[in-house]
Amino acid sequence: MARFTLLDYGIFAVYLAASVFIGMWFSRGEKSLKEYFLAGAHMNRFVVAMTILAALFSGISYLAGPSEVYTNGIAFSLVLLSFFIATPFTCIWILPHFYNSRYFTAYHFLQERFSLSLRLLASGLFILRVSLWLAAATYAPALALKEVTGMPLWFTIICTGVVSTIYTMMGGMRAVIWTDIMQLGVLFGGQLIIVLVALGKIPGGLAGVWDIAQAGGKLDVSLSFDPRERVTLWGVIIGGAFLNLVQMATDQVSVQRYLTATSLREAQRSLWIKLWMILPVLVLFYGTGLVLYAFYHSTGDPLTTGQINRADQILPYFVITQLPVGLPGLLIAAIFAASMSTVSSGVNSLTSATMCDFYQTLTKPGMWSEKALLFRAKLFTLFYGALVTGLAFGIASMKSNLVESVNSVIGLVGGPMLGLFLLGIFSRRVDSRGAILGCVAGFLAPIGLMFYKTVPPGGGDPVPISFLWFSMIGCLVTVLVGLLTPSRSVPR
Image (cartoon, rainbow, N blue to C red; front, side, top):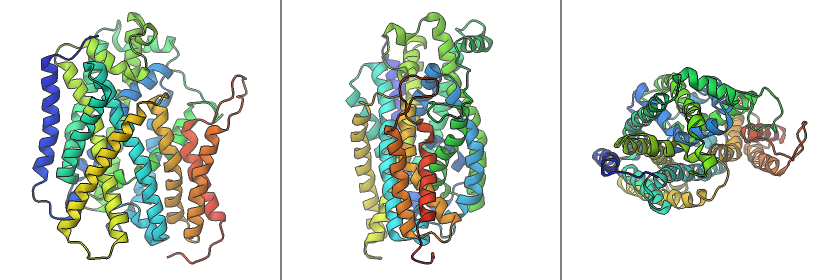
């Protein structure tokens, strides 16, 4: 298998150095936590839209999106329709509650609505979920670089974690935002190059891709309402809407970006801008899977021939075997761009949750100076960077594909979290006790369904509920148990 040339190494190294330089540049003049976590709340709507988009598209998107379509067809890609449900819901009913007091974290709302214990519980669940998510986002580009260069997986995982942590620790949210902008451009441009090169080698171009995909059943979409079927149209629209709401409405990674906007109206506009920006990005990402399927339909499937052993490796395999010298370095930098954007965003948000929800809340007010708090924030950033890097080694042993693994984690932990926010916003009689009991029930319900298997109507081996429904089930159980629990106090 081909490997990096010196030119490829040079392009890749320049990109990593540029990311660190941005962190160093924005580390100048930081004097407060508001500057470190919210970039002074001076960002305009277009910048906020791009950084939200970049944070959602990780190396997992870069690798798992095309491989999902390559292996299973376009059904999961229709999740883009669910954004038309999640975006207006977040803009109209969720976002205003985060701007009442200019919170630093999403979970401050839960303290004012319920209790401090609920705030700590929600923030703790966020820390758990995002730590696991970031570990997967660190592993994905490490896998790609291993396939390209032959370097050990442990080395490439550490490389990703260290670079992301350094510029995030030094530059805070401003560094994260502006590296997001740079990385989004590299990410989108890299994927476009792959598609154009592949199309040039497929007889008939786009028409040829369509015909081959249709003949191979890759355009088929199930309309079944059976929740045991892995991916259906209703699963990606309804279940996908709940998955997106978890990330858009309750996730500190997203909420922290909304709070960098100059006002609520600017934050709402940024979400609408992101909605229209995400459509071509998703079409390109998932469309790459169809293009690669058509390309290898005639040249031979590298999975079948044993040249790669996982579908998640199909994209980097194409890059190193089909692209001219220099472009592999750029394309692997694009994969790292997506992943470092996600890792840096997540680590900064983990730090803000820890500092604002736990450290400052549980210590005496005024105990620490702003300078001392800023120093501790950077120490927590370093800690979470190391933690995520360590967890990435565990992700490497997972056997299921990345799309299913990551969305399962989001659904299991994020569903109850979404339920807490819905209870707090739409019900005035549910108290802290009901919310906590609902959250516990909402967490246990989808876990039980993971192990409960039944034989589908058509026969065959028993199967569990599809991962697409985990977040919806967890959310609805949380809301139902919370509403049914007798209230002991009048909500504030």
